[in-house]
Length: 161
Image (cartoon, rainbow, N blue to C red; front, side, top):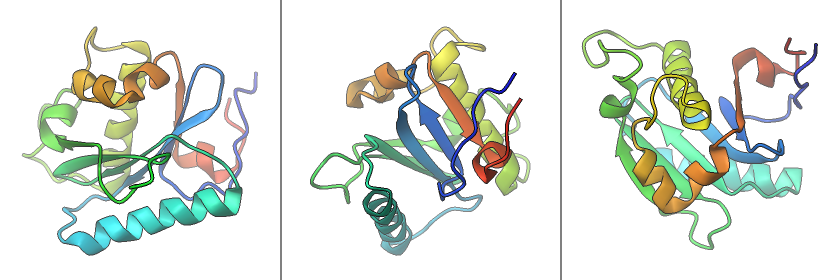
């Protein structure tokens, strides 16, 4: 049974959809610490370009690196400022207890972030997943609950079964 075939024009590592299958979040994952303002500026320009080119609205964007998770509200006139800033280790160590002790490569970091987002949606590991309160405060938790996440092969345009 086919779950969904996604458009391969989505240039992000992970997307999340709400329960009605509307994209509510795009996520960029970088398996290094992003120092300096240029990385955030690059990400914001990437989000703006995508939203304009796709002629679509997506309420949230997330930039994740080894140390920080930044959440941006895309429908905000001031997209350049994050609406929530969360340390990565306390969140992802819930899914990988050795986080911070072992080397984390891109695909593994992406998988950990997707596990966390899926836990927020379905509570498969925790009744209250890490950072739930911060996401609720900005309105993302309410939208992601009972939703779906996709990464990797699903975003390559291949059919997912």
